Image (cartoon, rainbow, N blue to C red; front, top):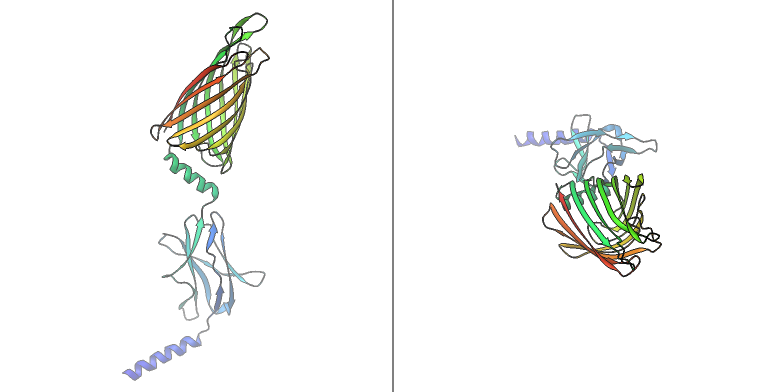
Length: 337
């Protein structure tokens, strides 16, 4: 009996040696980019001795898929795996010989080779944003601000402004989309009449925030306004260097039809959480100043996130236009959902 078993084993080994097999030399990739096919290359000796295939599957997937090796025009052999999402996929290379036996040439079903797939930068940034925001993609905010410039002749030179804004966060290269309405009401000295005139406007706007770099954001706004002088346009732009929700530097400008231009530089810092603070220098003609003097004030603002959904803001300002500097103030709130 032992002699018969030994003969069978020797016969099987001899038969296996008689069946030709391919020799596969393969250098595996260890990482790939999300959204891009994965190219596999190999040098194969006696390629027609076996039917060579790549068995692959996404990490965590139960089912294996197959793709064959094809000859390239350069003389080598290649196989292309479809694009994979993070965290990646795994594969092994096997061949089926003329006797119908599957032979592993690189890795195996029980020990496949893993290719890690990294998410694209914009996907990683979106993931960080959504984790930071708790998947709250929308926000409604209300802000009220005002400043009294004072006047050396005792004339009224002041304005108040309110804006109601809806924000939808896309969190991609297009980071945010906003729509809103606002109103400005104020008094400005008339140097020829030695009195103050009432000026104001009502306006609606659309605005976008673009993420052009992980730490550079550009805001752009256009709108339509109506005032005592009729209909007109409104535009606004701002560049943020840094993260708008962390420490950053913001430079912006705005033009309101009939009310004039405004420009600002704002430094924001988050060194005392949960408070987010900022200091600004603002040059403005609001509310449509008729004097040649420049309205200029400095402002300090602070935001406090009471809960993940509810934020309150406050501001104080101080500065002149044509006379002794006077104060201003602001309040705001935002609700995320």
